[in-house]
Length: 160
View 1 (cartoon, one colour):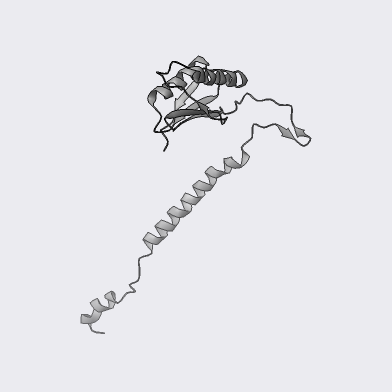
View 2: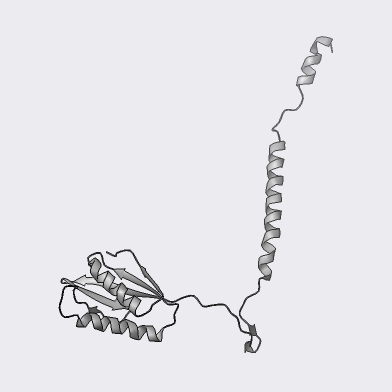
């Protein structure tokens, strides 16, 4: 072949897709899965805090505390009167703040105190008012909870 065709012979080499980026990605994925598998292994040997043997419950005790119990006090407005449903009991009517007779409010306060005597100290009380309930009624219930010595009293967003 004459010398003038020599450059054409060099350019006729095989030209195909470059496999280097694909190999790099495959190796990165392989390393990722290998590391992920080595981190997940310790989860297989987690020990529980419950002492159980073949004969049933074991004799080991733990100091882990049970989660606190949440109790709702729901206030809803009906016919210009607020009703209180404390701890899923029957609804009790409330007297207004300006009413001279506060007997219904005293019944609610005594009910909250009676419930407190049967519950633990870590019970969480959540006051859930309806959006039509006056603020004074919500504060009255809060004061009753404080007088009954509930440790954790919170308010939920107005419903409805």
